Length: 115
Length: 114
Image (tube, one colour):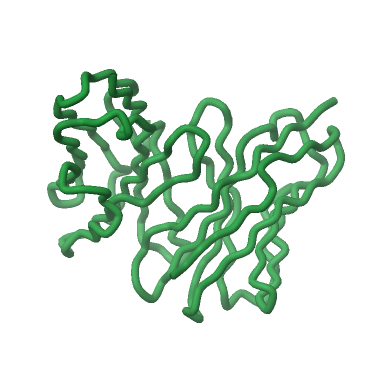
């Protein structure tokens, strides 16, 4: 069964510094997609970045990049130049293309950015 | 607006009552998903609709939960005989089914069962 693991319940980072949020996954299927979502205190889920299992390069979207290490089954999110507005919950999720289109979510990491 | 909308935003109900939650997906999105998020937890998949295909109901926690979708339009999630453990935020998402399969989420309905 597919599984997403986020081992960091909470992280602190100083403004303007970079931070890495960990995510490992487990699947037996060769085709899958990995996502990161941000959930501010207001509750909405905001899509940040996507990485396909066959993508050769790590995904980047502005200050977000995904450190994809396929052999280790890890898909860590790197946020560069942290801003106070980055304080939120961050969820890693996986989509399995072979069987169903649902997303499997991790338990999340709460990031707090301090001045 | 052009995003996913959900109603009501908040719902307080007594244990044993039935509730209906509504989701309006983004126009043109063929896929629609319902998730549940308990306080401090991640999202749990409930049900998935894709076009006219049979829905994937594998995440529904009990037969008290059901959902319908008419074509590629609105969906309703119904919880019968609500229990206190049903208290959660219910999130709806829609997707075009394009290669990245990005899901766009609505603001959620916060359900409180007293």
